[in-house]
Image (cartoon, rainbow, N blue to C red):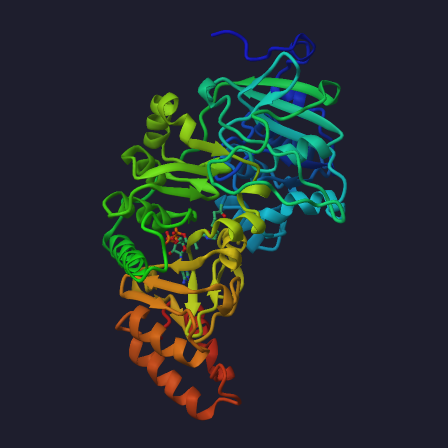
Length: 503
Ligand code: 0RQ
């Protein structure tokens, strides 16, 4: 295959991953590409991890500050975390090695809203950005860059960094060219203007990243697939959750509260969100659209079925089989797909304007409808808030879902009070478990408690929740959100002590 580097000045900068890694010094802040396992640099981070290990073995400190789009892959977060080479990281992470280090207190993790990363970088208080390390599909003759399988924060990293290192990945499908929409109209206050997007499939920017070739210090050629982790096959619980949600949408359409083709869908990360999209393939809704952050297997199936007309996202997050399907069908599907910077895919202004139906997974919810998306037992990070906050606060309907129990029934995901809150009750309008759906819109906290326990809690935990609520309604200091402070977290403490919330 021919070279994907169309500019001679940059062909001259092709080098090995080791030589490129040598251009990054200890203490640097590196802005990496990568979003939910796609489009992340694969060769230079691995070489960098080897270099860091060698430096550490020689007794020399070497740590980086790492900024990304969202989660990456084992060659990036995994390798650098294993080398103990990350001092500070933002935002969303799902790498298991990095997760363990964060939970041991050995790595600082700033778990922020994904839409806010780029604007905060521009506001300046995240500090200077030394290096942008970005995977691309190709380099054009004018030096502009063909983005890869995710866009993330790449536009911002390329603009803000003092130097740029590019990985040109031949594995990425050349048909990706033209699918991206890079919007260059954002600014800081007082110069902000409305973002002119009124339909999910609309293009408002350019298909390429602008990049000053003089800033590019290294180009590395790779031929390596994205991480592409498989999803769990949808289980009984997942199918039940999808069923309740479809019933809810049908009901809302029948009541005239949603159009027959629904509103732009947002589907979160993980197995449940994926299963719900598969559920929509068999549902009655035609002519739907998606304005979302990641495009998982289920949404690809929905596109292939023709029920989803178009999808706007910032990244693919596919299993190996689905990545294969996408690559085979990309010529057919590319006009119906747009990949945008995460600042745009997750923009509160656009989510509110379009009226997204936000469907996100959760760790747990409490009886008043506050949701925890991130922390186990109040203190251990699982992944991060990701885009769930961007969508939940601004959606037309904000939905959270999970099986009613975790860890084989030892944990109830409906609890008296969640010890960590990502989404306050005002940002949670519908809760769904395999037991049923609770429509919380226009309910007071006391009314919510009854509906959530009745519709969503597992029968094994329902009596204990009812008992708690009865006593809270008798003994609580106030009756707006009845709570027994000394008992509220006892379920979590019991799990920590005995491995079972039931004791
Ligand atoms: O742990 O893997 O050790 O078995 O959490 O749980 O059931 O596989 O659920 O894959 O749908 O992920 C909230 C994590 C759900 C995800 C979360 C344990 C459970 C398992 C995963 P194991 P499941 P899913 C836009 C939207 C935040 C970001 C977001 C997430 C593991 O959806 O990261 O929404 N969301 N972004 O056993 C203890 C509980 C538990 C529990 C589950 N109550 N207590 N452990 N688990 N519930 C997209 C982006 O932002 C990129």
